[in-house]
Image 1 (tube, rainbow, N blue to C red):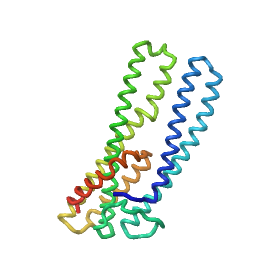
Image 2 (cartoon, one colour):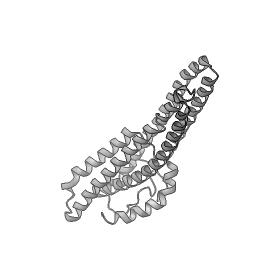
Image 3 (tube, helix red, strand yellow):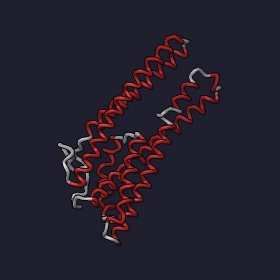
Image 4 (cartoon, rainbow, N blue to C red):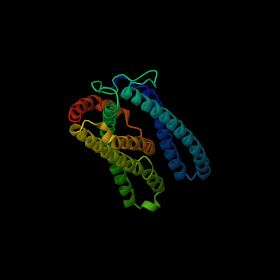
Length: 249
């Protein structure tokens, strides 16, 4: 079970600014609703300009810390897999594969562990996000019953529902977890072939392709895995991974 990883602090800072973004976004939304209700159009216009600047800065800082975290994560991944020293302060029990000798095979097993944790955490995130979407749909449906387009708060509500916090986020997480499933299945195929043939060279291309696709997916989706869900599932997933790993080593 993970005790320490060099990229954790960067991810925490990224998550802090991401939460600040969310709080600011909802504060601006509520303030906009109030301004709309009282017909403060000038104030609403100024708020719109300020919000664009503030939200852009918060998002940039959050993404910058995430980029730094991913860079450290990749270097620590190589250190644990090949015994290199790209990171001064290496992770402590972040990977649970010490019984595997450093080299290409351990790299594959570490990647499988990364994907295993990520796909399970993203599945839980998807379930929570789906519940939020169902609640949002219920609220919007209720509002529409009383005349959606004549309601002052209807359009802002529709905008937030269609924003990254609801349906777009749900689609992104759904795509993310499905691609992780495909990557994990690909590595299981490689591992099964290795049981029949100890020569890894024949399967290196498939493994390296999966590794590249995984890293591209992490960058492209820009999803921050929920740290609370990770902490809740860490011990359970570690035990589950150790049992799963026995089938493929």
